[in-house]
Amino acid sequence: MRARVTNSPGVDRPDLSTLFAATADGIDVPTTATFAVLNPATEHVVGYAPSVTPDQLDGVFAAAERACQPWQSDEGARRQALHAAADAIDAATDELSGLLTAEQGKPLAEARSEFTRAAVWLRYFADLQLGHEDVPHLDGRAAVQRRPLGVVAAITPWNVPLVLAVWKIAPALRAGNTMVLKPSPFTPLTTLAVGHLLRRVLPAGVLNIIAGPDPLGAALVAHPTPRKVSFTGSTATGIKVAQAAAAGLKRVTLELGGNDPAIIFDDVDVTAIAETLFWNAFTNNGQICRAVKRVYAHESIHAELVEALATIAASTKVGDGSDPAVRLGPLNNPAQRDRVAELVRDALDHGATVAAGGRQPARPGYFYEPTILDNVTDGVRVVDEEQFGPVLPVVAFRDTADVIRSANRGPYGLTASVWSNDLDRARAVADQLDAGQVSLNVHGGGVVPHLPFGGHKLSGIGVENGPWGLDAYCDLRVITSAGR
Image 1: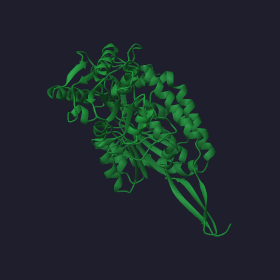
Image 2: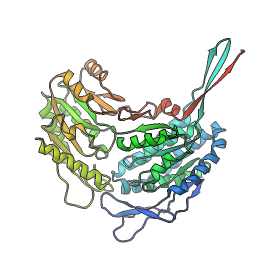
Image 3: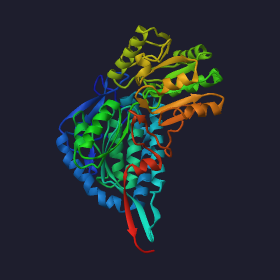
Image 4: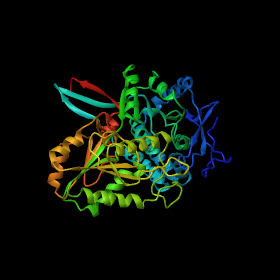
């Protein structure tokens, strides 16, 4: 059964001319059931996605296995196919970006940016060389080769569904693997559409995209065929993925949660940095793993910074992402909206004050006002936990050693930032932060195709992007020779 987009009453219908299904072996996966996908701005149905069942996974993985050997054998064809995939995604931006906004909630400009970035990542990996080395060995030579793993599995989240799918697709296919990918059931439609689109440029079975509610994800990880599982999502689910993958000694890449600190020193120009800092926290309504989740501001500029951030929050237009004037859409799902509201209530119960926002608008949709919280400290849940939404606590600090300890406390270590006009001081503090990426005078400034991205502690295992991300989809093979 094909996914369908309907124009019945109470249903939001993006401007689509084609219907989409799950893809395996280059054709539709036959299904007998569907599940509804809701527009988080209206709570209306966007469309119905096909529900692939766990007992269909044998056939899907068999298609991926059949495609492995011919796909591995022609590196030039793989490069060409990835470039063609990038061109196809670029060409589909106008047609599909509205669908992404409808199912995810983000403003249309950000949805369009996902298509642009996805194409950039595909082209980067298409042109990236697989690293092979020839090294001295005794009286001869040894060749260290990178070989594809075979079939790999991927599970992607609802916050940046297309880009984070391509973060896995591009290096996996470049290395010579084939893939079975499952998007979040909150945002499957755009990924399914892209899977349909890429049938034109990828050989059958190379990229298989399926959808379905639980327990499909657990069955995908537990299936005996894939040699690796790449997962982006919550730490709690990532731990379950790692446990299930361990039974088959599958490799894992886990890009998980973060409670990312920004440390603002007393020598900054608050007026100059406030806008950048705000959007580093609130882009995509704060639903980005690398977003600023907590600000530590030196006590001498703390009040000024809170006021500046509150002014921006109060002036930011919130609404349906299909409105070009909207800067912040809804939260993607009611559970996330309710979590944000709960954390704000808890903070207020512990003495926090609302400098801006702090309310759920009386309207349909999963909206929450962009919120700045003052008078908060370590030990309050909104500071200690990952909120993943439009609320930002601003904590005052006095001592550098103390703020470094605060930034490093807790179980996460994804990204961090240090803001100061004294770059020597900023670098010295950055060297002491336990995070996979630390930026100076911006946050998340290194999320680009050519740099590794991954977390410390409970923020994940392994990295994505760059040659390091490509290596994660390879086995090493050594060939030795006794003579020159």
